[in-house]
Image (cartoon, rainbow, N blue to C red; front, side, top):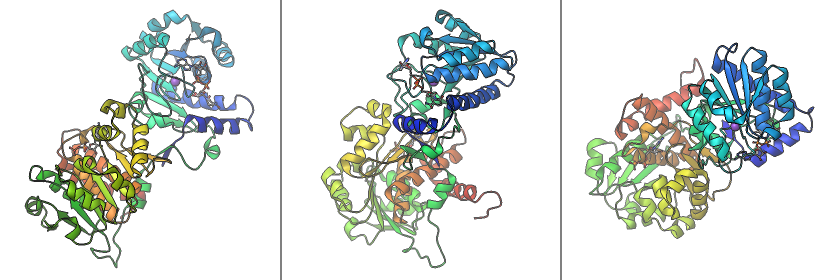
Length: 488
Ligand SMILES: NC(=O)C1=CN([C@@H]2O[C@H](COP(=O)(O)OP(=O)(O)OC[C@H]3O[C@@H](n4cnc5c(N)ncnc54)[C@H](O)[C@@H]3O)[C@@H](O)[C@H]2O)[C@@H](O)CC1
Ligand SMILES: Nc1ncnc2c1ncn2[C@@H]1O[C@H](COP(=O)(O)OP(=O)(O)O)[C@@H](O)[C@H]1O
Ligand SMILES: [K+]
């Protein structure tokens, strides 16, 4: 499990840890990890040209101490001080002792152009607002330069708590973060600025609370959630998922949702709606009915909405059922908020950014720029678990408070028509198999993302290909969790 904590929590944990350690210990641990990562990126330290961008806080201190370590190994290290009078005194002294130099701020751009490595120590978790004006030309020079850019703790200019990026920010090839991930490192758009993230252990773990702001499941945790038939299983005990989707205009959405549902662990898939012929032609194993959700027979969970057009009656009928319900696509627009809030069984809503924006009455850009706030807000308003699709898919628990899950497996190749329908069927099937709304959403997104990667392998794919790759993703998750030699 990868976890991320917000700035206030990190600061409290650091205070508790620092109280028990000699002064400067944490910064030395951070600087040692940072210098190691820089050296690995450089390959050859001796003779390399390193530029440190140094702000007025401890983030700059980390950069200066790491720079001192690189200078002792023969790198030519120059520090560009953004607030010359306020740079970390201990770090500055260490750099000078090691033979590093300090440059005039005006020389920054020229130095960056000729550098092999730029270390971004402008701001870390103390950053407020975007990059200040004087740092913007340096960020642009770093983007132009062929130098590798390493961000200290997080790329300067991004919001550590939310992943928002207002204005310019440093774009890193690697981010070396300390103690724990910060939410911004796992959520777009900031995640994209961070590049790959390396976590340096500074001993903070024991001081952090049990409930992180954000968590990303990995193979082992997802494997533990996946339902598995046992000797006494039959199709009903495994769970039946009902799919109320598709319309005369959009029969394909029904087919794709069923395609996802058949690979999601339920023992049977019931389809209800006007696209029964198309569904049966493709998947004869589906139990098809055109008598509406109430009279279709028992299910353990419903999926409603993909390609539903304007069929508000079906959505209302499904929301009245006392089993878990996943609401997607048109169903989100048609669902009555009061009816969702009044439900006693779990509800999982799965909007993309555009749908979330419509529900919140804001622009799509606002949702995409502040995903964490949007997903919590929706989960609060509807009293439902919410899965916000897109790059860095998020899953918030009903009510919106508590740990949010972020999916690490997504790929932009999934941005293809109908792949969301596959996800709704897949996650609905997991709901029917007995997973909670948050678990079904996050395990579904995890498998869906992996399936997208397996199907695409660097080339465009259709939603059907994604559905067909789900069993491979499932096997990969189970095999990865068993470790070498596992047979599943
Ligand atoms: N506290 C600790 O125990 C540790 C902290 N560490 C480092 O310390 C960092 C936090 O240090 P600080 O609390 O000093 O904060 P920062 O170094 O992140 O930034 C604070 C300084 O930057 C200025 N500033 C704020 N917003 C700015 C902006 N948008 N543009 C330019 N300047 C801005 C502030 O005026 C302040 O002087 C962490 O990110 C990490 O790199 C590490 O050394 C590990 C241990
Ligand atoms: N840039 C992206 N990176 C990763 N995943 C993405 C990206 N864009 C879309 N996706 C994923 O692709 C799927 C698209 O779903 P959706 O927008 O509902 O499309 P549709 O309605 O056509 O099925 C979602 O699972 C979403 O998370
Ligand atoms: K930084």
